[in-house]
Length: 178
Image 1 (cartoon, rainbow, N blue to C red):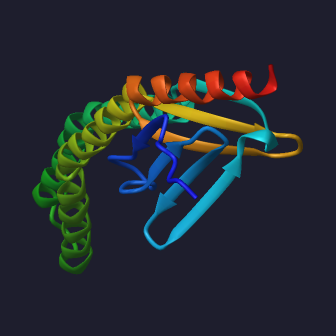
Image 2 (image 1 turned 180 degrees about the horizontal axis):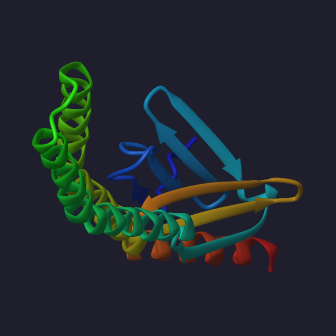
């Protein structure tokens, strides 16, 4: 038996499939990764597709986090001012010592909480930016359609090598069926 030369290869450089490789031969497609191997005879494939997609959920999360960050930043100053004014009013009209001490402690705790709103808004805004970046990057997905099933291989970003590999698989598949 003579060894077959691969017609095309694609190695996953990132994501869940990092380090694995798709190899196209004249009669089969082989996925090797880690300690596993999967061979798909081209005769079993019905269609091959490749697409660049963006996940709209990431955009929704980014918008929601940005709105929350803006709301926290907007209420932080007025809330801090209001609580400080209430605490000053309690201090000014000190009548019953124990109740005043409890109110001052509660106002101090609320004041400390409102001071955390601005850093928390910054953290939420940073998370929103990260979601926007991942939304913008999107992913390239290779779909292998069988008679009753579908197998997907996804990589982050618009990956031209994955698109070229899919074209090679499609060409080989059409050559075998034609």
